[in-house]
Image (tube, rainbow, N blue to C red; front, side, top):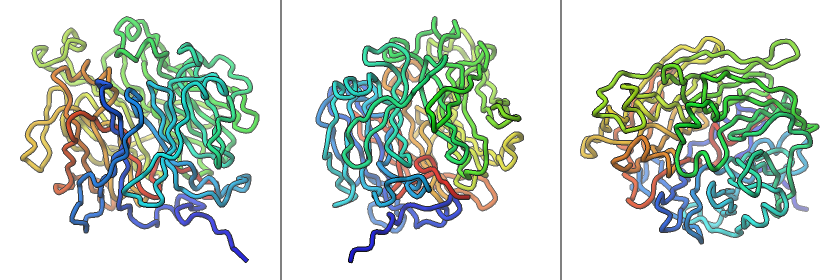
Length: 464
């Protein structure tokens, strides 16, 4: 008799996940901004005891060019242990990797040899369009009943974008998720509160407003995304919209509390049209509705116009440009990437409505050009961008590229890719691991990081 057991990397609660074994590998999306060579998933050794620590030790190339690999995720995770999950015995084995520009999905098997992942299926954009009517695939989340994929546009590249599902086992496209989308027109990120049957989605723009770079007229006209949408996760219907106001543009990354009993989360707003500041907002329950409150504001820094890219010269300041955030597994520390100024900031968010700064490092930056302590690399460009946290909260990894067409708008001299790691103190505080610096091979730029066995933005949980 065979006894089926859940994947050992699945944990019923975030508290148990924080006790997981340390990661030894990281998977990193790398893309060619010139779209001349295939994008890739690189494998980076993150085991300090290894002789190849801080080196790329494997890579799987995509079969086409021009995918623009961006955000990707696991086929299955701890949500498979939820009481309503029909798939408790799938395993965290496959990376589901979409092309943001190509709308192509790649299914990559990491099991036979985690250092040599292999593509086992490619789902072409025509199949996604036929079955789900969507394109420009952006984010992957493993849910209790399937793999959720969101898209920034419909099949023709127009609004509205939305979410569709893949089957856990076959990876077949099942179809659109929304039953009633209400006023939702723009899409960007999505995540959920499984314990409160609620999905949240954020907004960017339609492909014509970002695929060739940010459009100043669209930005200054306040026509990029500025709203959060709340959905009934069970009935798949839109419940509520919150408009952040014309001043706030690009409401991006969503990080709900990991504890499923907590009905709050954090979202970053990239820029204020009033003063170029960036902000972090907390959403929370207010009676029988959802509400938001701005809890962090990060000001722009005055700068010599001669040192600024054309897009910022007239403002005489460097915008922080908060382009990613991540929340530690214990819901205590929020990490905020300031891609413009070069800061990675750590906040204690034990009180989610009153964060306190507890750590800050600087690397790269539009004007700062701060170096890594591994001094031979010299002044760096790009800045903290996609950030990922180990499950125990002790290590933070990040890369420096935002998006192929947007990188040169803010770093016009070109952007050299890198990946770094921070060590986290027991009560907060962050410092560079001086022995970890990946000088990314020319021709590719690194974007999202996924950690072996799961990380702080891959899994959701049904038990506290």
